[in-house]
Length: 478
Image (cartoon, rainbow, N blue to C red; front, side, top):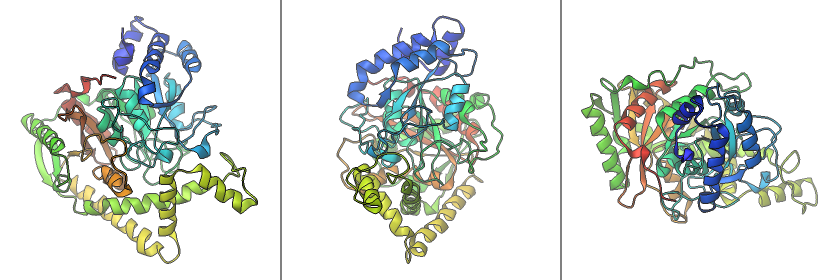
């Protein structure tokens, strides 16, 4: 039996009936990883002995008892490396668990391995990993998206039952779309960021990659909730996200923003998303035209706010307190400079330099302060739109997966997240689900966006579409 191809729900049913054990699942996954991950490189590390030991002790009565989960390598796990796919943290071992990791452990999950990513979550292709890029399981010549490309790839290739990633400007939803799985970016403050290595603190959010929408709801039940350790966590009640999945879409108001259906989007992507709109209409949803007029400024605002926050957050990696230290330094300042020069990759350096520039004296008001004002306009756009509709429907990515090395200039790469970035700036929730394939058999993603802390309705709208189609059941031939 190919246990690696099953969902959380299916495996939990088999575990409850004592048809299988958690060790059976982990053993099957380890065999799958050994067979396909040399091609995918979705994992940076897998500790087989530890995973089997966890499985042997798993409490199957708990919500995720015995279920193996992959973890993006920028989320702290006590006693394990947390490299952020960067040489500067190559030998760093975390002394504590992130809150989401503690919650997974409390729920009985098995931590399977650490997923590949763009260095410090900066990228849209996982080509920026210091330890080698990840590959898309649907076409090994193509990228899996980023920055959580490894998490998406291992779920799509059945090397994990589910995974956690982080989303700062689309880093869960975009790779989920390109790899053909489900990826949810929760509302900012819904899931604790404590223990996730910060890229841009006002944008980062942890969320799940799964094979189905119901599995995403199951994981959200576990990882959501207020955390006193994290000062942006919100004390908002956490519903049972699985309880309303069968609500259907009759009467649902689906907003279609004209700014997201633009020239430059691949015609096959446009056609698949238009078919999804028709499906919602045919099943009783009300299709409403909405406008998000400040969308055109989202990329500019994001690459000011995110880089400014990255510049501040990454200042802690100096070779003094932890992580790599250059052996070539002649004094403290020289050591600091050489450590960062040798430890950071080119994309991280680019963003730190840009962020330092926009925060510098004489430019702060012209760039960073102005960007924050426009961010407020973007938030207002979504607030006004959600007065007219319940969810907003858009493409997740303007194209399907592109070939590695195809987008060699930074600007073209940054535009890969053009449909996802505004969701982070507005702090609302969004999900990507499969909605078709291109003629070359690459997945296409559909993005649904929900209002603040409205994940339950968002998941119900996504689940209804998923149940009406078979896209999520299709598997790549690795």
